[in-house]
Image (cartoon, rainbow, N blue to C red; front, side, top):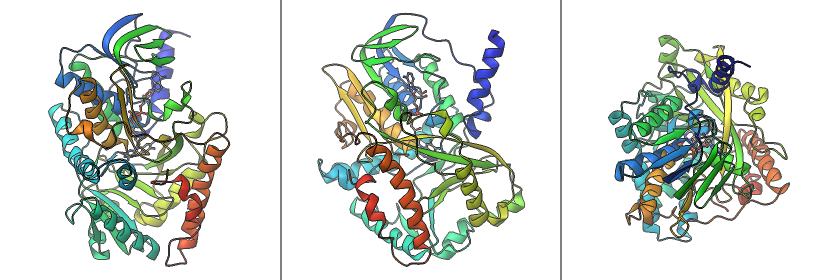
Length: 470
Ligand SMILES: Cc1cc2nc3c(=O)[nH]c(=O)nc-3n(C[C@H](O)[C@H](O)[C@H](O)COP(=O)(O)OP(=O)(O)OC[C@H]3O[C@@H](n4cnc5c(N)ncnc54)[C@H](O)[C@@H]3O)c2cc1C
C-alpha cells in the first residue's frame, strides 16, 4: 500500500471513532513515531487527558524536565476524544469509600477541588487558546418517576454530608426544570453549576498542541509493549526514564498482568444533524447544560456548540476473551435505544437524522474510585479508574501526578485518591457476569420503576458490584 493511501485510511479510521474526531478541522495524521532508543526524565504512556494533563503540569512547574509521551495511535484516540463532553462535578466514586481509609475532611477537600477544577480547566482552555466550544452551563439530571425523584433527595443529602451547600447542588422544581429543558413528564431535576460542556476531541487535540509548545515530545503510532520502572519498551525502541507513568485507562486491561485492574464498560453515543433554532426553542438547553436522566440505565448528553443533540448511554457488555475491542463501539441495539430516548425525551427532535454513532470503554475499578499511584523508590506511577468521569478527574490526577513526581508536598498529594487501594475484579467469568448483570438488572429495574413509587428491590442484587460497594 502506498504511504498516501495508508495515511488516508488511518485518517478515516480516526475520524470514524467519534462525532468529535470527525469534526476536528486539522489533519489527524499521526505525529512521528519514536525514532529509536532514547532517554528522558519522565516517560508517560497514553496521550489522553490523563497523560497530557500530567505532562502539562510537569512542564509548567519544572520547564527544565525532559518529558516524552508515547501514544499507540494519536492524541485523543481513546475515551478522551470520544466522550460526552461533560466536565462534571466532583470526584469519581463514593466519598464514603474514600473515608473508610482517610480523614473525612480530606474527602471534603477533594470534592471542593474537583468543583474548582471546572474553572481551572476553563482557564487553561482560555490561556492556551483551545477552540473547543467550552460553556459552563452546569449539570442537570431530570427525574421522570417518583423513585427517581426520591433518589434526588438521597443524593443531595449525601452531598451535604460531604460539604456541599445549596449553591453546589439543589433540587429543581418542575417549573425550574422547564426553564432549562422541556422533557415530557419531568417531575424534578438535580442541578449543580459546577460543570461545563466541551467538544472533547477539539479539547484533547488542543491540549496536546499546548503540551508540545511547552517542549514535550509526543510520539504517536508508538505502542508500549512493556511499561516498567525505568523503561518503556516499544517496537521502535526503548525509552529509559527515571520516572515512568502509565495513563492508559480502559486499555490498561490489555497489558500483561493488568487484566483484572478494571471492568471495561462500554458507553455509546449518537448525534443528530444540526437542529434548527425552532427545534431548540422547543427543547431549551440554552446554557448547554450537560443533561441526562436518573434512570438506572441513564442517558447523558449535550447540545453541541454546532447545535446538534449528542446523547450517550451504556452499551451492551463486552464478550469473553477480548474486553476492549473496536467491534463493540457501534451496537444497533444501543443506537435504537438512544434514538428512542430522543423521541421520548426530546420529541421536537424526533425524526432528526442521526449522523454519527460511536463509543468507547470506561475503566471501572472494583470500588468505582479513582486512584493516583507513584512509588518514589522505583519512579513508577499510574493514575485513572475514573468510572466514566475522567474529564474533570484526569485534570486533578494530572496535577497530583506532577506534584508526586516532583516530590512536592502539597494539598493535592494528601488527597484520598493518592495511593488509594482497590481490590482487583474477580476472575472471569465472574467479571463478565458482573458486567452483564449490571446492565440487565439496571434495565429491568427502570421498567419496574415506571409503575412504582420506590426504587426497585432488584437493584440490591448488583449493589456488591456498583459504585461505592467495592
Ligand atoms: C462514550 C463515552 C462518554 C463519556 N462521557 C464522559 C463525560 O461526559 N464526562 C466525563 O467526565 N467522562 C466521560 N467519559 C469518560 C472519559 O472520557 C474518560 O474517563 C477519560 O477520557 C479518560 O482519559 P484517559 O486519558 O485516562 O484515557 P484515554 O483517553 O482512553 O487515553 C488513553 C490513551 O492511551 C493510549 N494507549 C493505550 N494503550 C497503550 C499502549 N500500550 N501504548 C501506548 N499508548 C497506549 C490509547 O491509545 C489512548 O489514547 C466518557 C467515556 C466514553 C467512552
